[in-house]
Image 1 (tube, rainbow, N blue to C red):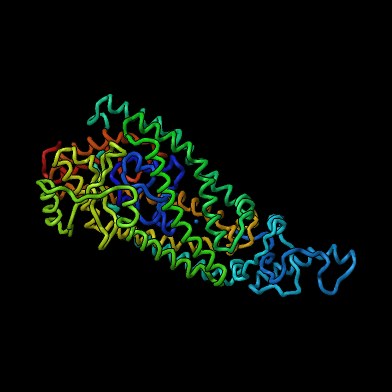
Image 2 (cartoon, helix red, strand yellow; image 1 turned 45 degrees about the horizontal axis):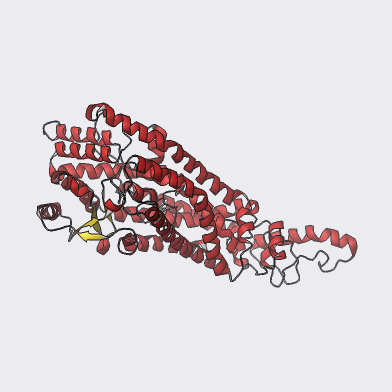
Length: 556
């Protein structure tokens, strides 16, 4: 959701590092928690986080021979070990017979007998040749059982219906809009030219990052790359899950790092970023650490369930739902302080007016926090994060340089998010999406396992394929999330106008945000679909004029 950001163009910057925005729900804890995105911290948002990206980040793998890794006590293929046969002819027929029997047993969900010999695919043979002999529990073979997939398919449909219902209920589909946006009416030629130049400078790295994200995901889910790389790891299964997640994350980040540096250079050239390379690197590594931690927790739980529970998708869906809720709840007090220092807004007329406005709006706010964003960016922003006891309204210290009435309007917008529980509903949709992803993983796993050379999801080498599928899920869900987010942001704008009844100051504030943050004043259709989590500045200004006309106020 857009609960933590009010700068219009941050979403495209997220894509530059390849961190797919972690969709409210594509990833159990990283993307779905509603936290701010990594590249946004370098420009418009002060709180970098994992993509979930829910970056975010920043949902899958199977076997070539279904029962190959599930035969107790067997570690090496023995061609002539089929009972009742001997001689060269028997040895020649053994592989075909063993494969047929293994497939039949796996399909029926029955463990292979101790005297049955199966033949592993090449990738497994390579792994065993290097000395790895851990068996994969047979419970993972249940993903092939037609009797097991039917309940999962029904659950997937039901979850989809619930997600659509909650989204339809919580999203203001009929929100006030203005006429056609006209940037030339409110921005001079120099401002429009600067916006176009910045857009042109960032378009290439943005699309390169998107393409790189697709390529990396494709390699992970359509080739045995992950199995071959992770097959070299040693240790207990849980150690290899963690190491596997870290290895794939490190490889991916290494490939994306130059794009991140490129984009950071552009931000510096346009005056949006003022941090040094040391600070930038520290922020990026901390963000990566948060993502990796949440990812490892999720993958450990997933593989453990697949090794022990036949229908592992049921507890996996429940766990993904719960992890998303918990992560969103604790994120403001556990993870945000890793990136920024927060202090109470100093006593004065601004603080008094903001708290009075919150009381008048019926939104309980005990404090307004100020983030030290000025040590890394010149961008202006404010956001709401958390819910319940951890809900907080945060403004950038850079925003405090604006006129007081404009600051009050920005906070009034954030009060709209709090009043309508946008973070809570976003978290709920994200949690349902995470559960949906867990069930979908169970169902789609079989379609990619032979290409990836992984025996089952219980195999620790499967973590790369799971990560690839998570990325695909994030990319697919992104445009839909943006549609919902834009409507929610538009409602918060209307709420700010209803609360302050000052369309002239609203328009002045939107112009300041657009000029300072170098927002795209005329995004093309593709960029709008892929990246825009907020209406454009001219759209918001047009809406304010429509509000003034509707409420009998002078048109600004």
